[in-house]
Image (cartoon, rainbow, N blue to C red; front, side, top):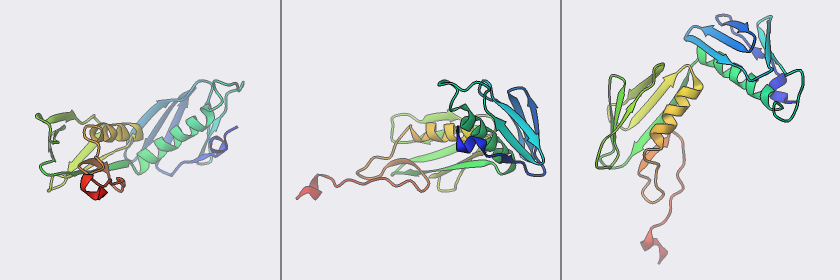
Length: 181
């Protein structure tokens, strides 16, 4: 059985959790999240701790559900208390981003602008230099998904490093043709 799945999730004072079968609703200072846990999992809440219980009959198909369910619950609790953020850096001459309302316009060296609609519940910030993006929100999946989608429009290439990278991501650089001599 999963070691992570057996650890209880600590609930801060301002977090309220409601369990209805496999449906879990977590409400905190930043907002409210709902999630349906995988089949067979149940959640017990007592003394400021939430414990995910495994399915009654463990087999090959549901063996990994305990760790998954505990991770989903822990991410929901952290999301409504602290929130999540992903930062992107745009590198390249003429590469930039503009934000108007909830529409993000990226100029990435293509013949056209790339237009991305920022999902509801995610806040996007663009710095003055138009080269740094920050996505923040309470749902870890949605924040990570929009950041990954934007990054995939122009992955950083290894020769000049032009493209979009996560903050702190290291691009392995290659030597060009002239460096071979």
